[in-house]
Length: 195
Image (cartoon, rainbow, N blue to C red):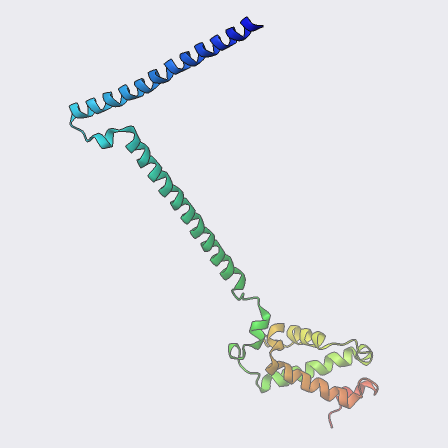
């Protein structure tokens, strides 16, 4: 056992000497390479700082940092641009937006006497046709407005009739019929009986 332990120690010393002998040779090789580069630079008349490998590494590192910064800034700008586009696209009023059009009184002219002359008979005709349903409360203002749009020939849309100025004319006649006919309890002749 004693001789085995001594052999292990001797092998360990040999390995450490062997590895120590390699280390200086690598270091010496690196120094020799650097001195060759410096000598070549002197022969060519170039600046030593620019030709050393460490200066090239610093330059590449500097470019990489700036390239990363540019990429990050470009990504941020792209995200902001997309966000602004989506904000504008989803909040822009569309031409089909009826609520904005219905409250914009300046967009269409006010109803005139011709509108009332054309609409009042249409309302009366519609209620006479549907008087049984009218008495049951199944005829709505929406039904009447759709009838007016399809039959009046005034080139008005349903959204136009949602404008209070137009709607008031329609509602006024409907209220008058409700009063004359007692909400559908009287005979149908009350719809057209204007005394």
